[in-house]
Amino acid sequence: MEIAPILEMVMLISFGASWPMQIAKTIRVKNPMGKSFIFQYLIVFGYICGIISKIYGPADKQWLIWVYLLDLALVSTDLILSHYYLARVKKAAKQAQS
Image 1 (cartoon, helix red, strand yellow):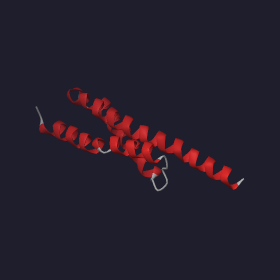
Image 2 (cartoon, helix red, strand yellow; image 1 turned 120 degrees about the vertical axis):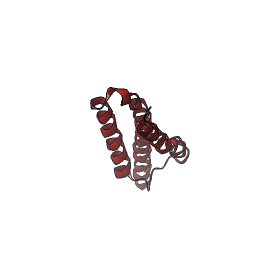
Image 3 (tube, rainbow, N blue to C red; image 1 turned 180 degrees about the vertical axis):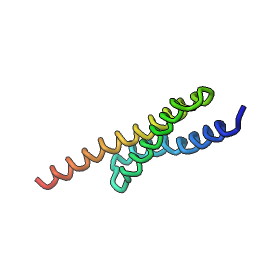
Image 4 (cartoon, one colour; image 1 turned 30 degrees about the vertical axis):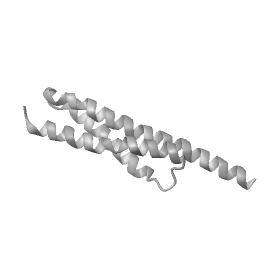
């Protein structure tokens, strides 16, 4: 087996390992102020590009799609939660001004 796909998988797992902690923090704090949505969208874009590269790449490396999908799901979960809590924070601030 080639070493490159294994190293790519390790990289993806390393990157993905931080997202469960970030999701937990988002849920705990319920305030996404200070988060960079552009950064998160760029990560989502990167994972989508990685998935597409595996679809059109060699068949023996397509199993890596599952690791990309897991990371994409984690980042997307945090992104959705961040938008949800941002809307709640803005709504509460608007009600406090009324």
